[in-house]
Length: 242
Ligand SMILES: Nc1ncnc2c1ncn2[C@@H]1O[C@H](COP(=O)(O)OP(=O)(O)OP(=O)(O)O)[C@@H](O)[C@H]1O
Picture 1 (cartoon, rainbow, N blue to C red):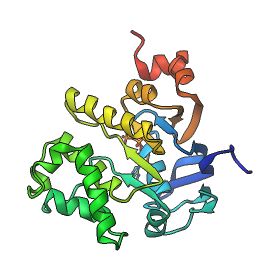
Picture 2 (cartoon, rainbow, N blue to C red):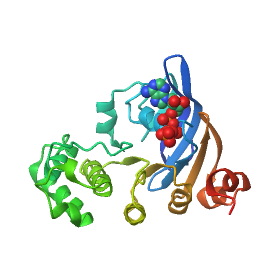
Picture 3 (cartoon, rainbow, N blue to C red):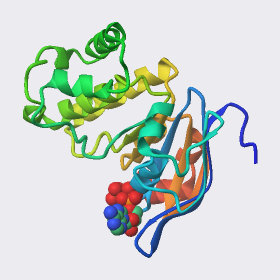
């Protein structure tokens, strides 16, 4: 019941679904404080649904989501965000008609202290200089890669205790994919706690400490990422036989 020592997130028996269907069927998952954990799996396996369940966008049908010792299952998305779980959604979902600066400030909507907002904003601009060069530009005019950076920067404005990244490399040019993974590596070096969902299993396993493989709503395998990357079934199914 007590989970692994050092786990900031302990998910037990989490079931989530839509209508009459369960898309995530009683999964257990742990994220250690300061770790990067990757969740990989085929299209429709339930990865996005899992993240939506953790951030409260989808209500748990059953099971427990303990975060820093407190039960999050059944709590509102607002309360979960206040507890420090922040999601960067699939497809970025920046506010297209707002400027880059406005998007960033939206990320700190729970922070009242102007000096603290300014400090965080500067931190984000140092990390993403490209955003700083065009603070007054509309977010909708950015390229996909830039929007991904903005979405990550917006999430970092909340100074999350757990960052949920949903397919950050989706649809991006190779150069941007490399840049996004560099940023994830930098966040890891700073001991940010991250749960990463990715179709790009190779890159996701390279950056992670621990990994989970989700198949049709169930955890098929989990373990140290290097071990998962060497598993013959994972190689055949997700890494390409070559
Ligand atoms: N809003 C929804 N309403 C009904 N069913 C949904 C909804 N969103 C997802 N599903 C179904 O739930 C299952 C899991 O989908 P989910 O998006 O979580 O998978 P995924 O692993 O993230 O896949 P992808 O890589 O395609 O995003 C799929 O069968 C999907 O069709």
